[in-house]
Image (cartoon, rainbow, N blue to C red; front, side, top):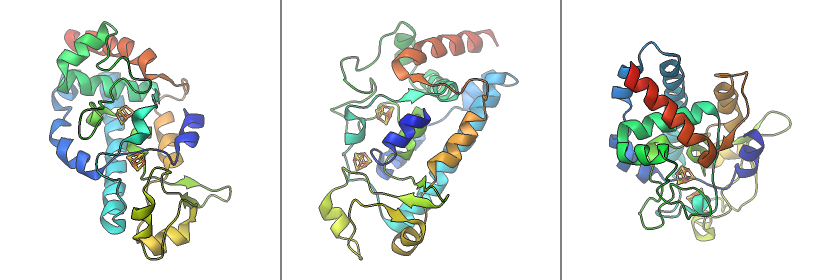
Length: 235
Ligand code: SF4
Ligand code: SF4
């Protein structure tokens, strides 16, 4: 996962408008309640806190920088299928059970909504915001376009997504390009700092240090969903 994260660091991401539009469809309350006291509920709660932290830092970043993806872009997902840590697959499964039970039941049989996509099987070409599981999406998709990485010296560095339109970069003063910006430049130009991907991924990996490997979404999600549904039907 980490190798992929580093590759994808500056590629992709999403738009604030989608977050606002879909936040009302982002509840896990009833499944949290059902799973209360289980190991799964504990992991889900910690994941929820990490995802909320990303959203909180990004909200400040978007507010101060105004640096948001062009509406309807979504190029980052077109040919990209995320790989997932177990904790990300668990959160995605819980979100599906809570918010899209028909899709969840189909997925348990191995049927994805958009199976012919070269990339992510949740990417909907026709929809305005493209991602059909926005509230359950994994870390990499939450970082798309609005995160920083660390330099060898440990400082934050930021590079605008390669798909970010030149004319939008040119509207900044000083004029921006697709180069990498240092922490002090980012602070000066944007007035805020985006979240640092590696800091948050370290916390995610620490949720299950014995199993740090990740698997492609299509490979891991059906079995995790099946397992979670089984537990939530039992308790
Ligand atoms: S600008 Fe980049 S990060 Fe943003 S939606 Fe487009 S491809 Fe994704
Ligand atoms: S989960 Fe959503 S945001 Fe992530 S790659 Fe798939 S369609 Fe894109």
